[in-house]
Image (cartoon, rainbow, N blue to C red):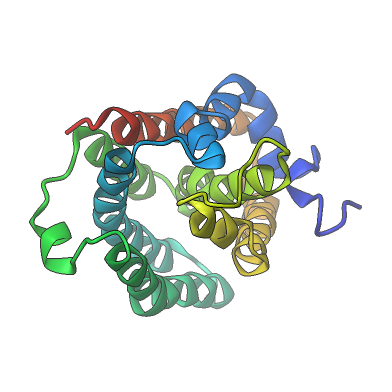
Length: 232
């Protein structure tokens, strides 16, 4: 059995199988130019500010998706797990995001006045659509590239010798997602996918889940493109 440390690389988990089935998209997401330039500190500040503004709006819809996960769950344990994540997003993570954005000169009022970029709308509405049209496993698979992907990206950047920490304006961002707290959240998401799959992954269903995972990962790439190129 894989240890907690290497759970993101375990090919026997549902996440591992999905990642392998969508290897090209996953690589493009985790090693995007936006990510590389976060690591070496060369990402233009205006690109990062645009990303932060849109990420605030994204988190609002992300919270809606976790509220849907409560509704879609058919066991009390799964309802509680989704409700716990929703509570953390609304009452903790959003506050941390606002505090972090303040360090970049962004206020809540300013971010709430922003219009959603097309890439943001496409991604968030896709996740919600998959949750509405499918079951709770479809929804969690659509959420996985964000929840697990940011942990993988943070861990990759933290361990990459090309990453610059001294004087890097994005050091806090890297350390947040590489930190043990977020890593544990993502490991929990890997385990939750397997728990849901144990009763729902019937014959022929994997291909449908892989399509969902591939599309959500592609939309994550679009989110990086949006930030890098200041797309609206």
